[in-house]
Image (cartoon, rainbow, N blue to C red; front, side):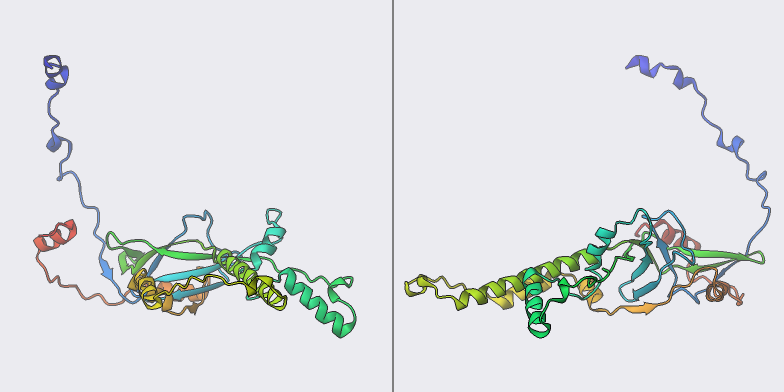
Length: 294
């Protein structure tokens, strides 16, 4: 312990911060007036794309957009190049089933269609040459938003004529790929399996069952549907329920090179230059900045 205390680090002189930094030598070169505008404060979002490494352009930009303003949710449909050598046509056909409302055709459905066509036309159209239609492909990817919890207040700044114009940011959201089409495919599979089970039950009901004449013990279970419904509803928070119930509103995406984007950009600058009067003292302002609760 003594060897540590007697090391040469103790003999190092203390740093003289006043000698290294002198405020008199740090001359103020200029002052920039700051203006606050709230014209776009309700609509100012910062979009982050953690999964993308390229900017949007007029060719690869969103082809459709929709928003839930109250829930701060946004969806963007990004086109996919189905002619690319890296695009799997086989998988694209499979995933496209989750983008439409068409039901899956089971073997039972196809058999019933063939029987109806044979009864009407004397033959099945599926067996005719050249009757196979071109399958749909997954030609777009949907980006869904996730709101980033706010840790502080952000502003967007733009400089013009030596002045800095600030607009408060309403929210920051991150856009990531959504795979709703996979969930929809799963729902279609379940519906198709249910149709098969119902068809098998109907066929089994038409056949005589020798076991029906024997006495069987039945176990009856009564479920309280009201309690289950209440518990299921309580599993969701009020915010999630409101977000699900809020309808999507279609919006139009404009590239930054368009005339519409230039008009919106002009709204970042204010033409009112009256000074703002603070409603708090300097000490109160510093306490608000520190985040320390008094």
